[in-house]
Image (spheres, helix red, strand yellow):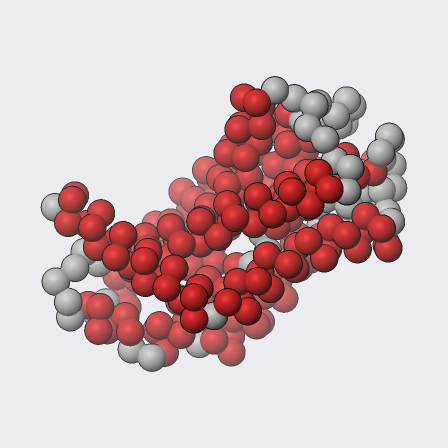
Length: 259
C-alpha cells in the first residue's frame, strides 16, 4: 500500500512538473519576482531602519524568508483550476491513492521553492551578501526556510479548496502581502511603534528571518524580546504548529470534495 501511494504521488508530482514546461513564463515570473523585490529594497527604496552594519546582510535573510511566503498563488490557482475543470473527479475514478493529488502538488511546490532559494542566494552573493557561519549552520538555515514554506504551502492548499474558484484566490492573495510585510524582513522591530514592533516579533516569518540571520553570523540580531532571543526555536515551533492545524484541515476538506 505504501509503495502504491508513493508511486501515485510521484506520478502526480511529474504531472505538476510537466506543467512547468507548458507554462515557462509563470515559472520565470515566480523566480524573478522575489529577486526584483530584493534589488528594489537593496538599491532603490533603501530602508533598514534600526539596522546596524551593512543593510544587505540584514535584508537578504529577510527576503529569503519572505520568498517562502510569496508565490503561493501558483499553487492555489492550480488547485482551484483542477477543481473547476473536474480533474479531481477524474482522478477519483482512477485506481490511485487519494493522497497522491495533494502530495504531488506539495512536492512540486517544494521543488520550485528550493529552486527559488538557490536563485535568491546566488543573487544575494552577487550584491555582496556573505555567509559567515559554518556549512552546518547553512544547511540548518535552508531547512528552516523550507519548513516555513511547507507550512505556508498547506495553508495555501486549504484556502484554495475553501475558495473553490480561481477568482476567489485573488481575494486570498491580498492577505498575504500585509502578513508578509508585517515582519522584520526590511526593518528591525525596534525602529517601529511599540505595539507594531511587538506584533512583528511574533510573526512566523520574523522568527525564520531572525534565525537565518543568527545562523549566518550576524551579531546582535537576537537582541530584544523573548521571541527574538529564541528565534531558532520559534522558527521550528511556528511552522510545525501551522502544519499541525492546516494539514488535517486540508486533508479533511479534500476528502469532503471526494464524496
